Length: 335
Figure 1 (cartoon, helix red, strand yellow):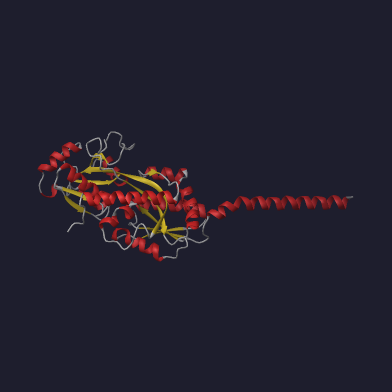
Figure 2 (figure 1 turned 30 degrees about the vertical axis):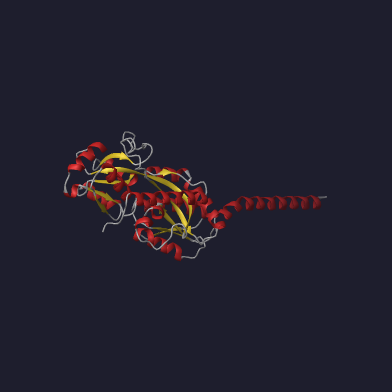
């Protein structure tokens, strides 16, 4: 019967259509679940626009935006050792719409030396790291040394401004490393802090300061250009970018071992269930080949956390280690 066949065909096609819609809906469900928000997200960065931290934040923000289908707006809030950025983070509603991209030293180093208005153990929740950054010992072009032994010999006889160690900020590992090096080498060095790596490196290149412990990402371009010297790596192993440069441990200074992570944190008021959703998206975004390639191009080592809890534990241990360093080496702000 033609009518019956036609009805069967209509029913069949309708069934196919319903199944197709169901499959499409199921396929889209994980993406909808991962996208913790349907609104633009603000990513606070406690550093100036154009700096290395800002550049990496923008690389990650683009990848997160692609994952959630919403704009991720980078909001630079530099100053006061990260306090200004953290105030912006914690004054926002704890709904996952405002996050922060930061270097770990804001949580594990600065509060130990600077008077900050936040408690890194109580006021924030780490979500995931995106990469790690290693540190190197660099010297001004006028310093007559090719290794740490020669550097120490020079600094013991140097006078005035030559007996100086710059840092990219007081209360950071750049500052800590200066003090550890000075004490272990028996040197009387003047610590000269700057507001970030660029001005410190500018003074180093101009021979206004003698040495600095700086992040590889900011120093490597100047090293490659021959504008500064690199004398050691402040890490357990040599770096792929500088395979011929020995570690500080190889040269007799095993305690000078620092690396910071960069990644995303949230206010401690954000519920744990929401933290897990954000973690899933940010971890996926940071793990994409495109993001990893860009991080490597900026001399960061791509790395994501096992979980928010694991990163919180690592951050606490790093804070405790730095607290012991501050105590042991009597590290204080310049008077």
